[in-house]
Length: 241
Image 1 (cartoon, one colour):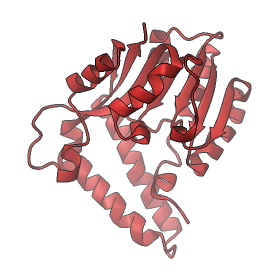
Image 2 (image 1 turned 90 degrees about the vertical axis):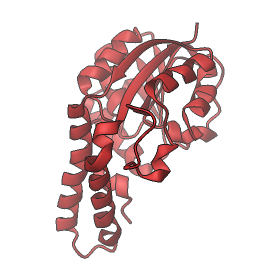
Image 3 (image 1 turned 30 degrees about the vertical axis):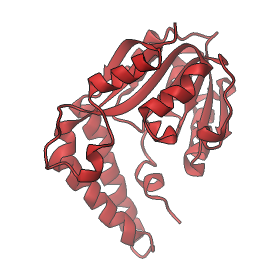
């Protein structure tokens, strides 16, 4: 049976509100090269890992729990000719033991939910990084958030200052912020809408249509009602020493 994000993100090159140019900028700021060993947790369909491996020649271990995304990442890496540089681990990253200092760089782009929140993510990942930790995470553009925001969302995220504070609290020195633009958000979110509509037209009798259609309507309404204006997303890089 289809899974909502397995359907609506089946055509996303990058599964976050960012761009290829910003992922390459991230690689430059991380000073990646052929000697670099990188861990990408919650790596999804492999978009950032493939871009970074192709651009910088670094070796990347990708950990992804969703079977659909793991399979897509392996196929995309083969098609891009970078599969010798990428190792794929199909597992819940929270269950994979990480040896201290085993990677130069650790990435977690849009997957801090694996360890519940940003603080838990940094605590889990920082020991494994010799050089830097980079986390992509939402943040509130203003605080307090207005009453128009759905109540269950208000407590999920911090401000950008709060996200930076979390890095410092873990002993990581913040050295880079790469922020999502409105265009990045629109490309990411509205492709959900397009893919969902196409899937629903092609599968009108599928039992999952009854759940996918209302969910995409809710997601679209929330995005237009307050998310586009109030919720940011940025990649923050913290140096370990």
